[in-house]
Image (cartoon, rainbow, N blue to C red; front, side, top):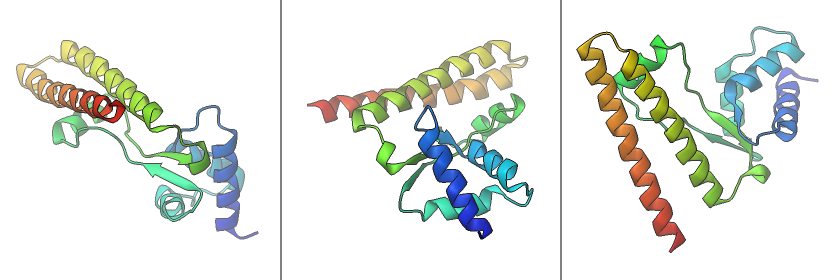
Length: 150
């Protein structure tokens, strides 16, 4: 079996068997490396393959794309990554809104905690900017969900 076929088999199996329909890209990469036993299995190979796969949908991170946000996440050792799901496991539009809203709420709590721990006023201001953008996203998402339910 060719390497790409083996990767496809592994990815689809993980996506089918996962408790949650949403699977972080890193988890797929790690599983492929474990099973194929090859460190040359990398994110770009799997991502390029999955983007064109007819059974798979990839969701890019739903976060403000700002230098402040990247800096904050790097300081905390967090990585924002694409999420992969089988199209047949896609939740309803309402469930997707709920999922995004919950993740943004979790992000907001995390940012508020980081802001409390910030040692300098500059850092607090940077985090405050991201908090404001996150609150704005939450509000826009809530309004969008309300309009969809009418």
